Amino acid sequence: MFTVEVIYATLEEQNILKLEVEDNSTIDDVIHQSNILELYPEIDLSLNKVGIFNQVKKLDYIVQSFDRIEIYRTLLADPKEVRRKRAVRQKEQGIIHSP
Image (cartoon, rainbow, N blue to C red):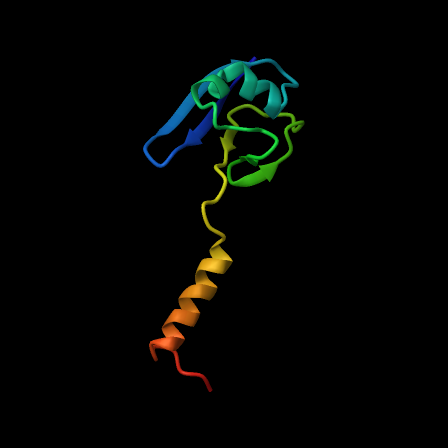
């Protein structure tokens, strides 16, 4: 047995759950053991990516002692599209000058 954390954040709060898990537990095992899916029914493990310390992992990844399992929310907007729209708007306003 060893300790891991499961983390999920909404726009309003961040929830960090510490739990003891068995050796050879997968991310999927730990997430289900944590009961975080009952606390946040909007989490869909077929859609939400998961990771360990900001590195995306698959659900069958075997966790290690002191791993921090992060469940990522789906993005509200594509960052590349937001930057593209901002650049177009700035060009139209004369903030960006074309060569």
